Image 1: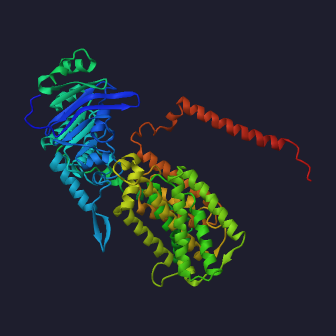
Image 2: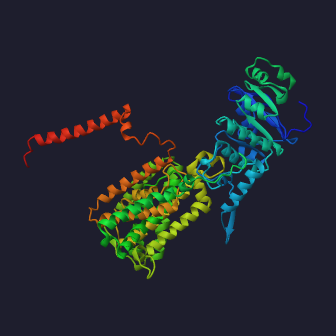
Image 3: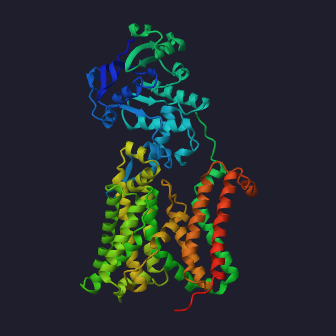
Length: 258
Length: 370
């Protein structure tokens, strides 16, 4: 890889053991600002464990992480959010009965006070949510007053992403299977959202099973197999066949190149 | 996805008012029936006074129960809590000589304590809401019986009687004002406070709420504390209304209040509630019971009516929520399904057994009188 930019987050020699089971063995990972890194691999290849370490849910058994050249240690997911790494889960973790704005600000509501008593400022939350969705993701919802479950899959994704990009000074957005449950049209919209986030200079890490989607959205593809990094390829210089070969272990040429 | 800003469909607009349409339709149905059957006695100012005072008693509890049900909870203990708090209040003013306002404050605080205990049983001991509050209902009712045995405590200070049935000249009765104030406060809590927002989030998706940093357990405890406090207030209002308290007071508060809240469009599956709907539900039930009384139908039928109203409204809202409603219009077609035929056969067997038992009883010789 020939990058002029320095990675915003890098992981070196990450190993994770659960009791006697080794989930990850000596794995490296680099997230570059303004780039989309896709992580692919078979079930049990260690993608999820790697992502959970990146988002502070798990702590590595060995290895180190750096953010902007400084050592990065995260004790919890809340810690990772505070440091600018947040995740959007496959289930999106939205409260379906709440409005998009209420979801975006859930747990960190905006308030105003009257005679020293603080209460929710719904108007400001709605305006802010509308602004973030429009300015950062290019999304305009039909109405901000409907429950979130009446939105389409892509719009719900937008709300979940908006929550992540708003709540912190976000540097890295991790997305777990963002297109798994979506139809072709909604997938295209989600890819657009990912592009929008990328174009704002954030590093995006995407786990996906769909090589089609991976080749449409990513700048690099990191292939995992049996807890190890098989290789990293530049998406524009690779093919589906090559990546597929690396996933199933037919060819290991990518490993040396990385 | 960009600029997809078509306006809402009529259906979507109507959906947010669904919680009002149901009870309002039933209220109009009652008005229509009574206008035909018994207009002279139903549409009297004094009768509206009775209806409003009956409804007022349930308003504070309906407000809190809305929040409890929004969190996917339920509180079956409120009748016993109301009885227990009214007994505490009665002892304070009658036996220990406390001023009325201290006794009333104590009753509400004591109710809050009962609610706190309910919350602890549910969140700390992990007893499901239904079982936990049902068991606590037995505990509180037992304490009532231990405290007063079969005695009726009566004749309270006029301030307490005023809370239960006092009139403000040229205005609504005092209990109605109290009830409406609690509902307005409930509306504010539901839409403008952390408690209301978190209650909704917890009921809608507990896992997501937890992930977002919402204090799930303490939110649930708080709504039960509010519920207990409102049950305490209702205990005071009931004691004032009847000017008497006994251990078996308020036996059906729980189901009556749950009925009112559910009729008002609050979802038993959590996440969705409506304070205005609960107000309509309380008014509907009060009007229904009053109509039964006006029609001189036996008192005990109101229990039957409340149960039927609960079933009808839950079934109605469940039907509304369903996305696929095709193939339901044809009732005869449904009989063709093998599963439904089996159900019909089971029903037939049960009826046949009952008929056989009664028939046998008629045939057998009558036992000699002892």
